[in-house]
Length: 225
Ligand code: CA
Image (cartoon, rainbow, N blue to C red; front, side, top):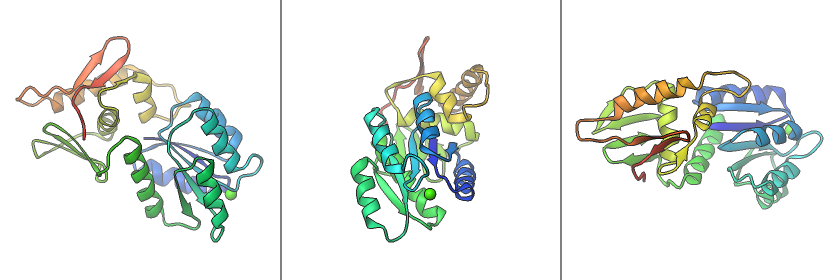
């Protein structure tokens, strides 16, 4: 998933950037609200982690502004210990959940995963479509109960398509799931990856869940639950 991290403490920002990247996310980590607004305007994020105590425009105003611009991705706030008013105001401003500093990365990750799951309408930590099952925690796929050998990039594409099942997903969106935005990448990469993914998914029983919608992108045709 593509995440926006807004944290002014350089060490924590770096820590979040590296741990979340290791967990398979594409992370844009910025130190202030102004840069966050720029990022949010340019790109499509799946979730934002926002520290409330920021220099310049504060986290609360940032959240209000993002919401007033119609950004509906889940927002997880980072708040200082003992400041319960922060949590209440943060949630009132449009945040979805909070983590109190200092926190264990595992707690933050668990809350983040829960938010991502709910925002795509799934209540469990698996997504199923016909013979295909995705384990969101272990980041593994099985087809007819057999483990599928997917590369990290193939898995990310499959997870994104399944989260947005029965919707056309543009190639650009898939690209954003793989690379940070400051890099130039060949869009043909997506075609190659989707091609490989299809070959791995198409079993003997006619299961062909990924359609190409010419000029628009890809469509995961099976209903996911
Ligand atoms: Ca801070």
